[in-house]
Length: 170
Image 1 (cartoon, rainbow, N blue to C red):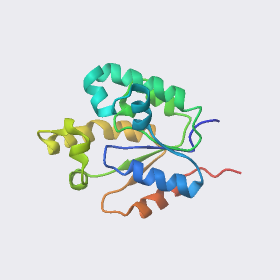
Image 2: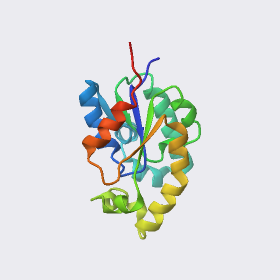
Image 3: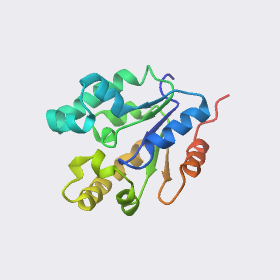
Image 4: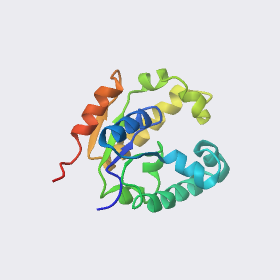
């Protein structure tokens, strides 16, 4: 099978980019942040693009970009927080090794810069994040081979657990 060796999913601030970069380095692979791919294609950051296109068109674009990317990238891929919820994405992820980085609400709210990076969380970040976690957690779990808790843990500890989920290749 071609495609990423590892795909990380989870809410914004769960550590996908941090742990993804570390995993790629440890595995000797390239790291890609899917939000960067979206920005490269559209010339606008993903957060702004959602507002510009609307949720439905944005998710269609995410699915199309991901469908093109998966066969081309054999490294580590961190998906955008909402990408797994886009129609058709679960089927695209099915043949790949996907790990869900889970984080609790209090930990998310303490993650520095989260609200500035994701202005759509305003005016009430706690309420928005709680709703987001409740809605997306079952989707993240459904598309993943493993769920790794990240709250109150170092990136190195999370990385060790993520790497332990990797399929053994002969």
